[in-house]
Length: 551
Ligand code: ADP
Ligand code: MG
Picture: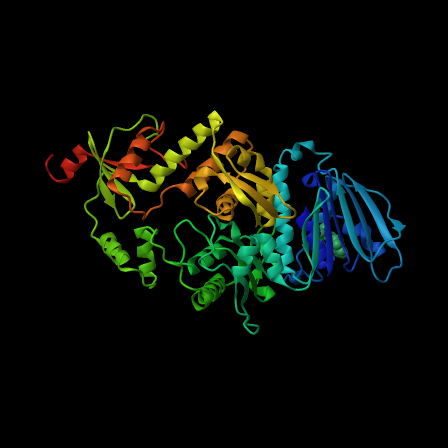
């Protein structure tokens, strides 16, 4: 709803848009703008279904320049709420006010008002209570609204947006044309500073501008990818794929770039009619557009980005990927690459044992492969143990046990540190402060999207407080779990992932043995807290079969 009202304001040429939301929109959504307004005699029409002032001729549908064009938004919102619209054009010296309750429009009345339009939507779904159930949790709705407004502020840097949620200002953009300022709200100040701007090519018929993250800044999900086609926010898997492809060999597996791209094509080259919510587009020549997107992003990355720093803690698999990307790596990586490229033996039956129930046999450490896997011998064959996954499991069970006993260790910082986050992240973090506290974080809101960290869990003490917090907020956005315990367990799992021994870290035999002992002591030793296997078992039997000792 916020989206539709904001789009109308943008279509009306507003330079200033103010949005006020109470109770995630259930109580009130108010959007006011200083746009062109609606002439008094057309106000009732604006609220009628299929009334749009935006299509002059039928063929305009094929070359849409405005965001709205169906004439449905206002009517459908008015049908399920108590809506008040006040509007005035510069030509009229008074405004007009209409109230609609559940689709029943009252008479239009003159009223004193500034030029522009103000729409107030109250008591959403008051007459269709069943639909209230379909609203997401308040947190989710609030986050979505903030996301929307931030995105539009990016697409329209010359429009000033102000968003207030439950009386608190959540977002403000001055409308001075500076996109980087808005980027900070979307990605946090730090990441925003590092984003690379794509070069402007004003003459091309397919123009791709905006910002992409350097390879050193990435996320664990695709939600940092935002696209606008001709000023309209779209969600399009093929655009996501094109950008991700441009980062080929520059990012670790499972990491995703961040980007805000503005793709401008002639209006007739794109069909926005595909999806009722209009979040999908169909390009008339998708290949051409995707190619330009991918090339522009790739060129920006290769031209401006420094190659990702090599630290010796990296896994061999990664080392290999960097090799193939033509980024020279240290010799040990070449060795690992060679290892990696060895011809594959006949397929082994490498079955991770099903289920995490049951313990594990006592194992004897034999050594380490690629600084990543432990090789161990058990009573019934050979075990390969993923040292990172195994350590995650160990830390996780330890942390949860300490939490249960109330003996959780945390490390107070001598100097509290402040961390500034994006609006989205700040909102998620705020809703999880209790869970964080239970796990040894002492974090408090410090105005706006800034937080102050006073203590972190002991097991993260090797990290800077800022890094420690980042490990969490990164993935918060995906969490929707209403259960406090579940939220806590997930946070704990993430903390442990960050604190665990990394792949590529060389361990002495004694350390390997200790890790195995610790793993044996776990109640679910066979999977990491995220559910991946910690070990692969090659049974004596399958070895014998592979070597032809058995038929
Ligand atoms: P659409 O945007 O698809 O035309 P809407 O139902 O959203 O349909 O709006 C109906 C009409 O009301 C618009 O075509 C426009 O003429 C008018 N209108 C709505 N909101 C505004 C606004 N903020 N400023 C000026 N005119 C508006
Ligand atoms: Mg509209």
